[in-house]
Amino acid sequence: MESMIEFIHERIGKKYYDQGIDFTMGNGHDTLFLSDYCKHVYSYDIQALALNNTKEFIKDKKNVTLFLKSHEYFDEDVRDFEVGIFNLGYLPGGNHECVTQYETTLKTIKKALEHLVKGGCLYVVVYIGHDQGKESTNLDAYFRTLDHKLYNVAKFEMMNKKNAPYVVIVEKR
Ligand code: SAM
Image (cartoon, rainbow, N blue to C red; front, side, top):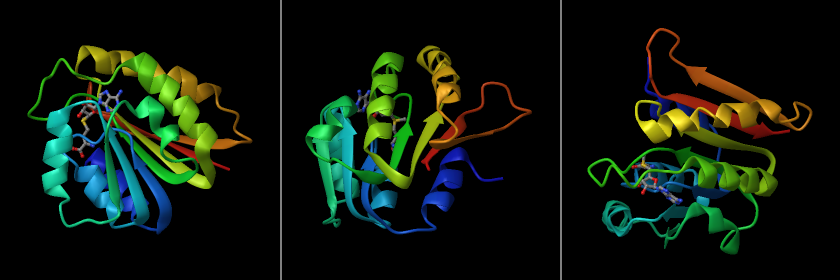
């Protein structure tokens, strides 16, 4: 079976989009992937190391803008978008203490759903193997409150592996 990231890339790769947002740039793998399927990609991280790594990783791409700022301010740069990825947790190979924060993530997801166009999808990859990740499972409580007439919300998870990462997909109807 594919990994959670492979799973979302496979789904995202079925269409072509105008605007895509990578809310957690990291080393740029999701940004690079989105750039193949979007007219333009906006990508955010709060760590200079992430920005520098990604700049090098996507150096041939002309349709990507990288931002060294928290994803909660994405609406300063882009209004409506069709596809977005949150890949929560810490920068692989970086400082494990600099990790996505539940409160900021929740605030940004709420704002992102306002700017997501009808038919668009938000993909949230949640890791629960570390403390902040455990807190992120509280996001599930929020996702369950979303009106099913406005959003389709689905979860993809390994049922037989403790603390395995999982994916929540929110589609705006
Ligand atoms: N998508 C990445 C990739 O393809 O390599 C992996 C992302 S990594 C698991 C999570 C990233 O989120 C870290 O690089 C971290 O610095 C970043 N991050 C944490 N808080 C953030 C925030 N408020 N806004 C934007 N990025 C944040």
